[in-house]
Length: 296
Image 1 (cartoon, rainbow, N blue to C red):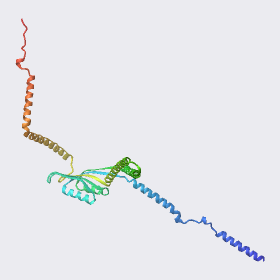
Image 2 (cartoon, helix red, strand yellow):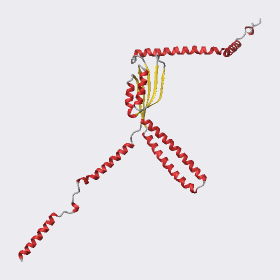
Image 3 (cartoon, rainbow, N blue to C red):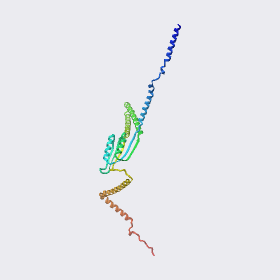
Image 4 (cartoon, rainbow, N blue to C red):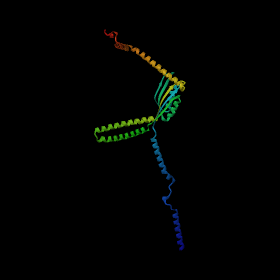
């Protein structure tokens, strides 16, 4: 009897020990490693996307303008190459002009619009056509103006939508005069929206395409100027100005000849009046008083 009780207590104690050693609270079980990293990764991704969105919204809007003067040996070859470059890089020509005759001094001027992505490549190719005399660039930041226009367009559209909704309500109950007044206000807002959208499109075009003012001058066997050649060029320029002034005087005199019946009598009358005036100022000898001698 005593042995049975002892064995029963041993079995109970052994079972209690197993239960105490193996039982682990569910709340203290470790979480999977992937789950612990999932939330911080999502937060980091959201923060990165937000930063990218802000950076995209703050991309600078720059208007690029270039002025290029290039001396070329063959103007026909140079102009053909300019046209090819514009077509290849999907740009367009705003204005072009060729002056002079073959065998004489000739020049060409262009106003080009080139996509900003191809701007540098086109500029380098144009400068390689000959000897650059001028290479100037200007950049204008219009980011703030563009953002203001964007906000203005958004606000005007919201105001227009509210007025249109109000117009639908007033058509059911208001007078005709009130409806007409509201329609005039809507038309005014619509005009402001279109003007703001036009300005926005203009800024987008100016920042998408760079403007290049190109001047090509044809000079056979061109060599860069030295101090001596500059002196000679200055003298020739001055002498040409003298000859041009003399030619202008001669041409003016020739142009007056057909008008001689008109200005001839006027000139004769003017000369006669001048002679009368001068004659009136000089006293006649007969009118001069003879000096009197005292008597005695």
